[in-house]
Structures are given as C-alpha cells and as structure tokens.
Image (cartoon, one colour):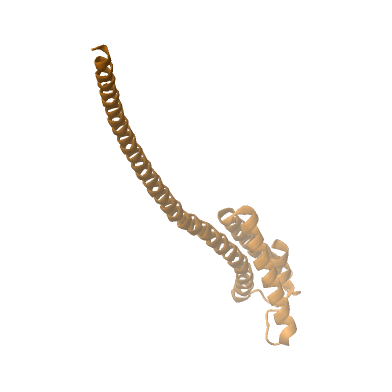
Length: 191
C-alpha cells in the first residue's frame, strides 16, 4: 500500500485531459489500495488494520511533500505554493481512503456472516425447545398409557381372583355336597 501511494505521486493529476489512460491508471491504483485495505482487515482486524492504513497515509503524505518540495522541477512546479502541497496531500489522502473503504467492506462482510450465524443459532433454539416440549408430551402420553395398562391389568387380576374365589367356593360346595351324598348313600347300607 505504501508503494502504491508513493507511485501515485508520479501520475499526472489531470485525469480527464489525457483521456482514459490516466483515468484507468488511477482506477487500477485505487482498486489495488482497496484490495490492500480488504486484506489488512482480513489479516490484522479492523482496529489494528485501520491504524496501519492511517499511519501509512500520514507517513506517505509527509514523505511525498518532502520529496515534491525537493524535486519540484521534476513534478512540474516552478514555485512551491501551499495550493500545490495541498493538492498532493489531498490526492494521497483520497487514494489512501480507498484502503479504509476496503477495510470497511471486509468488516461489513465479516459482521454479516457473524450475524447470519447468530440468526441460525437463534432459529435453532426454538426448534430445540419445541422438540423438548414434544418429547415431554410424548413421555406424559407414555406414562398415561402405562398407567392405563396397569389399571386394566389390575382389573383383570381382580376379576381372575374373584372368579378363582367363586370357583373355589363352588368347588368346595360341590365337594361338600358330594360328601353329604356319599354319606347318605353309605348310611342306608349300614342300616
């Protein structure tokens, strides 16, 4: 990024007078500075990358002003005026601001991804809660069915016990009546 900002000193400032060649060079330099800012955010983070971009812009402006003031004849200035210094400074700042734009674009993409992950987690939570509620309902239904089965089994057991007792009583009564009959039949023989 330092190199790109430094190279922009050697490009003519009158973009529209030299047709599209000058404009395309400026566009490519700004695009490369944008890419540098984008990568700085990806590698170093927004805060640290922003500090580096700012420091690079400030250092490059200071160095370029020093260089332009020493080699003013090469840059086409017969006399160094404040306006010329401001123009060079503003040109470097505008190119460097594309680095900040790259930082901001990458940060927006990063935060958007983070937001979508949070929204997915947020949407998964109600699903989990509904699944837990559904599982609780299923458990309660199973408990009710189990209690119903147990009650039916106990009812059948009582019915079977009652029938068994009735059968036992009838059997005892039958045995008792059979004994009495046997005794009655045995008594006439003895007489």
